[in-house]
Image 1 (tube, rainbow, N blue to C red):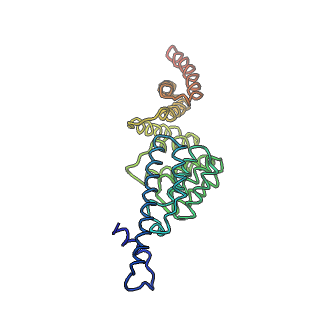
Image 2: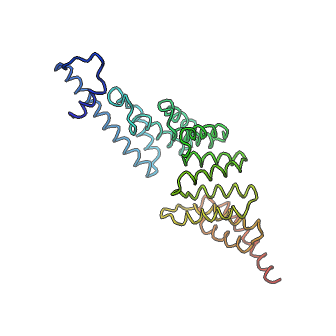
Image 3: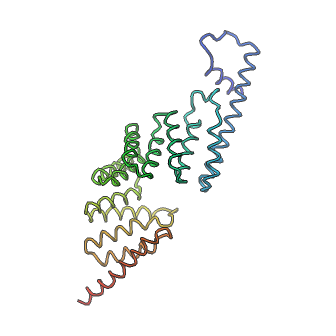
Length: 293
């Protein structure tokens, strides 16, 4: 408590501070430090509880924690200068992320706007706001947010990937590929399979099937190394690789890839899985006819 009191006194002294503090003034400072410490401890507890709930996917409960944190205002004491890790802007950011996951995009954008108002240089808030706009189909506005984030942090991997993803949705596949490549270059240790899949998709759109297959292979390799592989994650690169092989006339390779994709599909990918099964049947006939001939 003595350390906190000294920090509080240092941060809030004025140019006309008397040479010696009176007992009453010292008592006020210690009381303010006590109030700040209590508020800060409550804030830490809410953050810890909210993050744990978020990890367990209890979104509504986590949202309540961060909502309560936004109503705490210990900034009249030490947080007046805004600590780099804990402060109400972080709670607004978490609220926005959770609301995005709940599909409440307009509310999420309001939260991210609040974060940006408090900390205009918060790159993550700009990317998160862009994600909401992208989910709503407002691609040009989303792209502006990603560009703003990349102005602040040119090598931000989330911003580069999101920018490429949105450019692809706008049909600008060459630009999207450049953005994906910058994602890889921004961190030589980072090899995200979802970005390789996205790059492959843009290459397919440009009919560059050989390059697309290489990208899908990198994605499949990356996903296969994950110990926490989620259901359905391997399906998109396997399925799309099969499509590219099919376009190149490699029927047997395509049949193998479709078969692997079907095995890795989740229940949410039932429609694409059925499409793969139908094509696999057709390819089976084609392969047999080819061998008989």
